[in-house]
Length: 262
Image 1: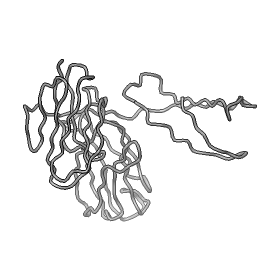
Image 2: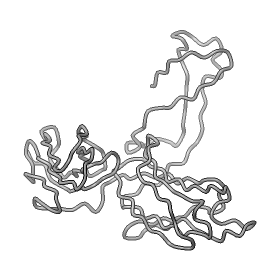
Image 3: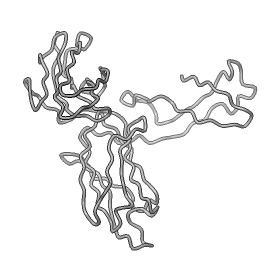
Image 4: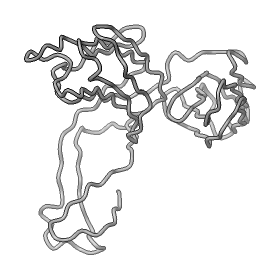
């Protein structure tokens, strides 16, 4: 249930943004069902139009990192692409391409919902029969294989590719220290200390995920000049394996698997 408050005159409209939904727990039918009730705290004088529903398709869920392969056409100055998180914030941006070249990007992101948006300022896509811009392509694959997908290159102004990262993949089992990252003790009993050395000032925070990709801890962001340190209580975590991630906003800098025992 979501409660919205506002002031609408007769026949006025308003767009209501619902809070993010935990799709990792979704097991129902793919029906988006909206029912309105209690306008101004009372009863609707005409309740026959208080409900609407529509069917939807779930987005692909990836357990491996996604690789973006962009083959440019003759006028790549018209193109840029970006990755948006569930709040619409840009977490990855690419532009400044050369003509008729191939670019690869591996998206190292935290679990969550994302959308890749490919833009064309000429509003004729990257492959259209009615111009001389040449032929381009925008494709996706997973690290280790298992997926080949692409967007329709004749898309006009922009085209979108939504997806979701569920589990953290390719995480490393490390004893204690590796490449400026320290986590101890491992296994952890009641708490774990995380240390990370950054080469430039950054706003960092710690996130912990279980092996199903659910976030079980998110620390407060702090401005760091060189070494980031944080002690995290593990007393409320069930025994098992987890992944700790050092985050710069929505961008994951480092992730390592550790265990909790009680």
